[in-house]
Length: 284
Image 1 (cartoon, one colour):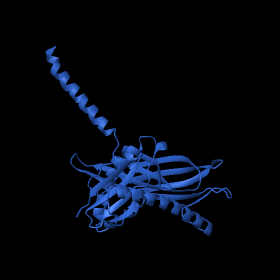
Image 2: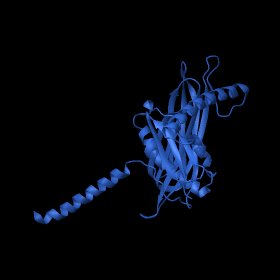
Image 3: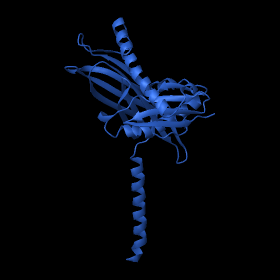
Image 4: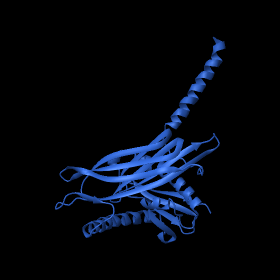
């Protein structure tokens, strides 16, 4: 009996290690690694579209996220946030191993006039060896204005093409901006931050820096900062937003603050009643 004890212990230990490793890979996450200059995202897109009226005062929205890398990768992941008049409406995340493509398609019911905005982070990992792991990344964005007026059929647009649409855009933008400014002012006061020492912009505008550097940073430094920013957002904002379920979300759009000396950036947000700030050092 004793002669079998050691082999059994070894086998049991190996099985235990394997279970732990598999369990670790089953937890989705966004991890930033040095950017891979030999690999790219060939296609990325976020699309919002009005589908149809559902009934009295309701309609359906199609929310689609998709991306394709230039080759099959060890891990591909897309994460998307949907904001509705400045409030977080939904979060979607999908990760797949050994693929080059990700597709997410959701259909949501809504009502009343809305300004919908969605930003997505498309991410991939190339594992050349255990010590050499590199990543690729890209952001995409879309927005949609939906007009639900009792005097006209439900309509939508992305860019206003006439006076009627321009007036609705100005109305929705103004109402959303007023709410966000009030909310962000509360957060700034809560964390005792002097807004004059920062360059600020809403999270939804982060996609503009795909190919444009952040203030006082190079494009390479910007890309690294954005990758690390999404890593922090995923852990501290996106995962908590997935629990409780999306229909119980209570959060306004986060605010990004970049120190004018370019030493650090801060993300301010409140999620389900809890105020948070993420602080990230920037490369000098």
